[in-house]
Image (cartoon, rainbow, N blue to C red):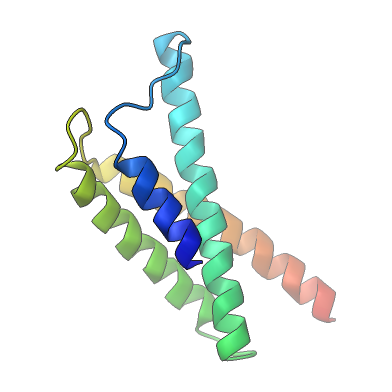
Length: 114
């Protein structure tokens, strides 16, 4: 989990992550990357919570709060990186990725335990 958070921070420190594709595809791929990286982060947070506090009802909520806080801090961090901007919309996309992954993981986990 800490290594994944470090990877997110590192990627946010790179001045430009543009790839050589049309602008619309660059935008789509970058936003999908946000969904993915924070989806993975949410699942890692949930797994950590389950390890520390097995079967506690608040684990998904606390994990999503962690995603929201880290996404917000990451966007603030990007305002200090040349060529990057912080965006409230990106925080929303990050949270959405975390929420979707948390829901899938939660359902999978419940099926597996029953």
